[in-house]
Image (cartoon, rainbow, N blue to C red; front, side, top):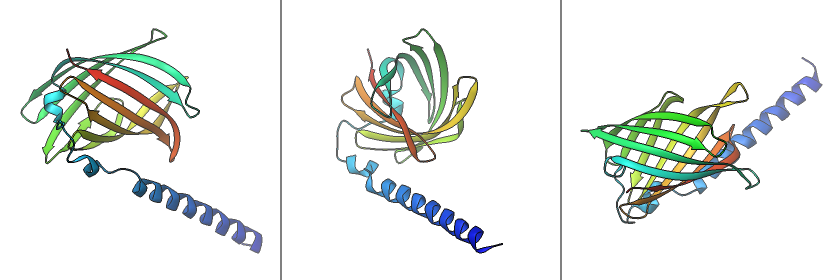
Length: 185
């Protein structure tokens, strides 16, 4: 291996290390779910995601432009610590989509979830009125499927309304945000 190749390898390693460090520092600098522990009303998923509800949302791209609008009709059911949340999406362009979550309440504000288009298992933690929900979604775009990470934050406003803000990213790069307002009848 010549000196030029060694120099390039070292430069690539330095860039990768810097990117990893920046990602780690950004993750540490953000809010933590325990920051909301004293907020009320207390969010308990099996209470809020039980029965019918509706959500209205938008996806905004990196520039903040609304790229998509949608409505979600949902029904949640729980049996003990196991729950099912059925989500039926209708987008402003007429496209529809269905996602069925299988949720598990692990206790102490910890939750897991699985869905057909989620890679592996979603992890969530609630404290006070907030829930942080993280997962990798298999997102179909123009005939290809991309694995994108979601970092969801949900905030219970009262017994009928919950707000949700999610950042979608790939390789640590922010692709856009999803904002939702949930409403129970």
